[in-house]
Image 1 (cartoon, rainbow, N blue to C red):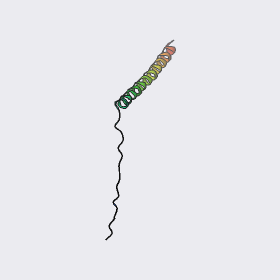
Image 2: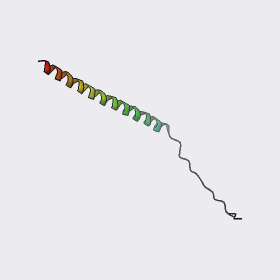
Image 3: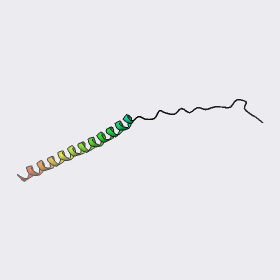
Image 4: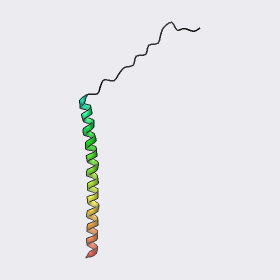
Amino acid sequence: MFLQSNPIIVTIKQAPPPSELSGLADVLLGSLGLTGVIVVAAVLMGTLLAGAMFWIRSRQM
């Protein structure tokens, strides 16, 4: 039989626990991203509606 005389020891290092500030930063960045998407959508819809209103009024005269 083949027996090892020296055992193999594996050490697993754990990552440090995340701080409370990093969790807060993730929440703030997520909310700012969502707010940015909503603002861009509102600006696009406003521009499209203004263009449609301008086009309809110019055709009536």
